[in-house]
Image 1 (spheres, one colour):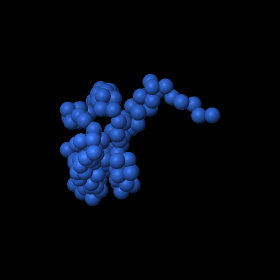
Image 2: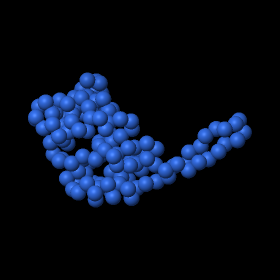
Image 3: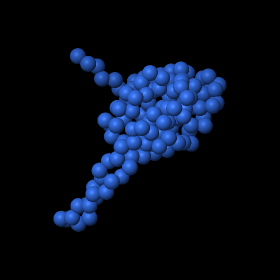
Image 4: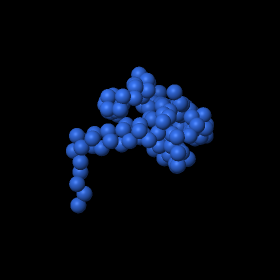
Length: 135
C-alpha cells in the first residue's frame, strides 16, 4: 500500500531536493516554459541527462527554498534568481558550460498547433512557436 505524503511533507521533500541541487550544481539557467508540452519537456530532459537537471515547480516555493538555503549557507549568489522567477519558468541546473546547455535546449524548439474559436462555425488555426527561451 502506498502512503501519500501530506502537503507539508511534500514541501519538505521539495526543499531538500532544491537545496541539494543548489549545493551540487554551480550554474543555473532559467528557462521560460510557455507552450511546452510534457513530451517536449521529457525529450529535453533526456537530451540533458548526465550533466544537467531540470526542476519545475511553484515559484513561491522555489523562492522560499532559495531564501532558506542562502540563510543556511551564507551564499548570496542565488538571491539574484528571485526576481527572475515570474511566470511559467523552470530551473536548469548544470555543471557544464551554460552556452552548450542553452544550445542543447534550443535544439528542441517545437511548434504547437493552437486554435482559437472565432465564431460558432469558424475555427482558425495558428502556428505558435514554443516559448522555450533561456532568460
